[in-house]
Amino acid sequence: MTNDQHTQAATTEDASPAGRTFEAALPGFGTVRIRPLDPAGDAATVHGWVDQEWARFWGMVGHSREQVRDIYAFVDSLPSHHAYLALRDDTPVALFQTYRPEHDPLGEHYQVAPGDLGIHLLVAPTEGNPRPGYTETLVSVFLAFVLADPAVRRLVAEPDARNEKSIARLLRTGFELGPEIQLPEKRARLVFLTREAGEALRHRAAASH
Image (cartoon, rainbow, N blue to C red; front, side, top):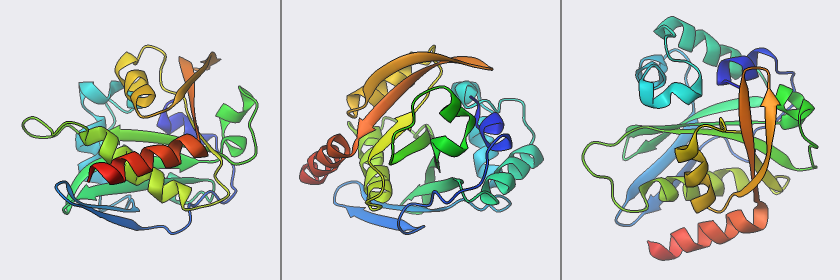
C-alpha cells in the first residue's frame, strides 16, 4: 500500500529501533547519519523526491509540499510508525521508514511473526555515477540501525509487484521472495530478510570498507 494509505490506517504501538539516531563512518564512502525526519523542516527535501516520476511507486506523485508535510506529521504522531532521513556527509540521500505490521493494514494480508518489522526505503538519485555498491552500503547502515534492537527478528517489505527494479535490489541485498498479495490499491510482492541474513550483509559491507 502507498505510504499515505499505510499511515492513515495505522494504529498505535511502539516500533522505534533501539536509539532514534545512528551514525556510521565508512572509510572511502563517508559518514552516514540516520535521524528522525522533521516533517516541517524536511518537507521540501522529501517533496522534491516523492513528487518525481522515478518515485511513482512511493505513492505521492502529485502531492503538494504541504500534503507531504502533513502526512509525515501524522507519521510522527504514531508510536507504531517512524520516518527517518539518512544523510551522507550531511547531504540527504534517502528516506527510511519502519512500522509494526501487526498495527498496519499489511498485517491483515500475511501471517505476522513475532519480531517482524516493516520497512520502506527510498534512495534518492545521486549526481554523476554512484560508486559500485552504493545502495547496498546504505542498506547495510539501515540494517545496523534496526538490528540494534534485539527484538527485531525479521524485516518485511511489500514493494509494488510491478516495481522490478526495487525487488531486484532487495534480492541483491539478501531479501527472499514471499508471495504476491492483493492490497486495496496495488498488487504487492512480499519480501523478507531474516536477522541472520541481515547480520551477514552488515559484516560483508563492513569488511568491504
